[in-house]
Length: 159
Ligand SMILES: [Cu+2]
Image (cartoon, rainbow, N blue to C red):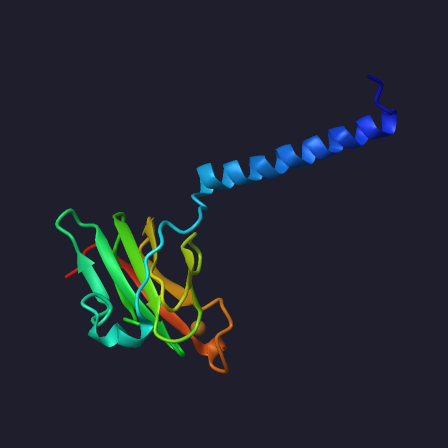
């Protein structure tokens, strides 16, 4: 079978592009821990206040020093704020929204998730640098969107 030179050229280009795109996915997955949401968990946004977990947003430190942070996002704030978490230990964030779609990006880290009403977003991150981090809502959520920020404080020792 003979393939025209131009056709062969473009077949190689297409093959190369597919290889580059797949490589980019594998590299960011393996080296930068970029991945799709961990699981699908639903919740009724109209009864958040009565929820055992999301009714009382806050930080729980486990015995091994890791922490679970339960966060509710609503127009135009995050609760709790500030969020105090331990340094060098896995911190699992569990997020949901009480109203519209918000974003939850911890600036300067790879922690970044959509916060969708009716769903629980979850990810785990380990902070290697103590100090304050800004949380930004990166999904346009209304007139106060540009003011919707929060703070994560990474501390060596939590009380
Ligand atoms: Cu928002």
